[in-house]
Length: 381
Image (cartoon, rainbow, N blue to C red; front, top):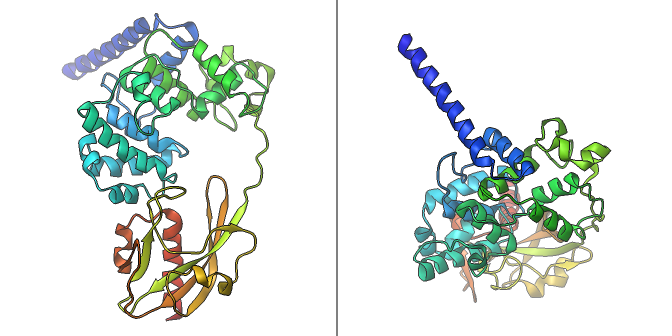
């Protein structure tokens, strides 16, 4: 028992020593940044790509997570990140991967151009930089898929470089901290300037992640937990009682709806016809179920779009339709079934057994078509 108490006492002293050491490190920060990093030292989120206290950040993990997190939530990204690093634990393995395998693993995260650029960037880093990421924001900007935000985030978090990392969470914190009432997106430059003015003189990566965590867990879009915020005394919006009203946004226009017919062709072996989309544009380079052009207006009559079908046969509309939401429009699709004998697949196309469709680089909307068609076919059998 005496030994147990001794070990416990030692751990308490060690914890107190760590806190004191953290406070000493934070004395070089501005008062507001110091308060925020102190809070982060106690309340940081444990994320699969984030280094634990005392550990060095893995640049590959930081970069991969930042690309995945664009337009996607932390909760949604977690399983994808874990799948990726199990398959490609280091950037050299990702660089050697087949493009279609990367696209298939990406399915569900959307914005598939990010997956193309992710793969291209991995190859560039291995080929031109010996597998090591450049460490400065300026150098990172020269890599495929690196915009201003990603370069700043990787520079700060992976390499502790001084960089102004401003995502949606940080914009929200700044809008409330300074009570900026002008709406997004017009106020973005002012928010960036405000964030730049608060940058500390050390612990840049921890500070950037602290701001992100604050926005994600305390300074939330709805019902912010102001009483728990380390910046409580400095927040002008809180003092004015308008924190939950900021940042203001220009009212978004309703998304247009495009409609089309998907052609689900099945041959006499039960195989499904798929084809590769052109590299440019939406879902570029992905595998698709052929279909008519996506147009605004009413759902087209089957007879009016049969000339866009991938082959000539008797097409029959299946009951129901599917809907899919993209960033700038919604898509509504009817699905037509066509049965054929042994027919050549045609340019950029191939016949795939249904049990092997999961291995294809089908984006989410195409997987919806497959599920819908197979379900309706099985019900009618």
